[in-house]
Length: 242
Image (tube, rainbow, N blue to C red; front, side, top):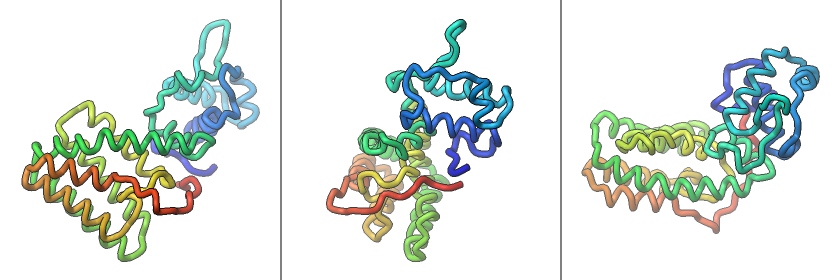
């Protein structure tokens, strides 16, 4: 079936159908105002009406489709999509809108994470700071072993945890977006995308600033980490397999 995103893992046929239909809508294969007939979907994907119905409900919650009496279910325009939904973020990042999605994610992270780092410096907890430090250590070890997957997982936990300890529930609500952004590689190259000594040191400086309660230093370190390096080139990877 291919990759499954965080929101649909472990849901069997239902999750697979959400994935397939979602990708088809986001890619434009199912264009705006296109009618979606449950019976046809069930026959095409060989799933029950219950699976189709539940899948369309999920897509409706994401703003991808609308269901109305006497009209049926139709694909909604991009302007109606929940573009902050982690699944839609990933579907866009591996479809025709990939360049726009990655640029927008980079800009959004630049807005969210420096502020989160500043706020987190005022909510110091030794156990959390130790966990962040542990993640830096894991990233360093993974880099030495050439283990990109472990590096990525530790990096994701680092940035997600940092947002969660900022003490702002609205920012906390956006942590899933940052996690999705980190899983979507191939965009503008920042310190998070380059497993090297400089990147590790930048993460370490953020931890040091949090330990001393220096919000300005934490914010500056995060901005430096997120600075785009246009001179660095890399191959855009294929979508993740789960």
